[in-house]
Each structure stands twice: as structure tokens, then as C-alpha cells.
Length: 104
View 1: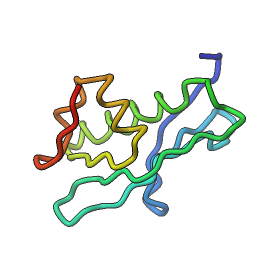
View 2: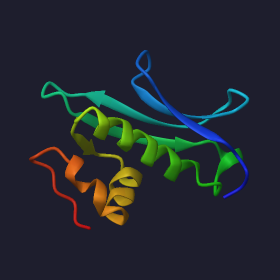
View 3: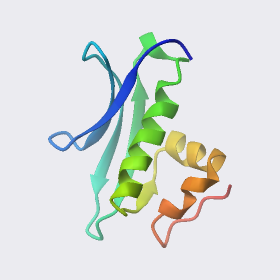
View 4: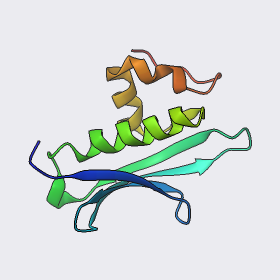
């Protein structure tokens, strides 16, 4: 990973978590839908081509999941990237909604 400083923030107006660089550039995002049970259905993750391979996706996944964990919210990872990331980081599997299974 390069020397990029990335902060992860939630944008309630757009229903997504964003990976934001120090200069304000949004380098990537994870789009979600709020479900009726209060869980977050993550439907799409995207990193700008200019920042591909810089660890933005992993920073975004960890930041988003840490924020949801702090708020005791469940996740439904429909996005293949987030599902795969959670499989590789099984300490986050406890965030899965009760009826969702992915294998570590």
C-alpha cells in the first residue's frame, strides 16, 4: 500500500460508505440498502481506477464493518468483494445477519 491516507465515512444522503483521501477525493465506495430489519445490504463496492491496487477496497471494507460493528448492526454482503473480504477476515463474520451464511 502506498502512503495514501484514507478515511472512511458514511454518506447517509447516498446510502454508501466512502473511502476519502486527505484532499477530499472519494477514491472508492460501498453502496448499501437499509433493510426493514435494520441490517445493511451491501450491494456494490467500487474503487476508482486511479487507486486500484492501493488497498483502498480493504480499507473501505474494514472501516465500514468497524462502523457497523460499533453500532451493533448486521450485514448482508451481496457484493462479492465484501463477502470475499469477510471470508478472509473471519473475525467479522459475527456481523452477518442471522439468516446469512458465508464460509471462512
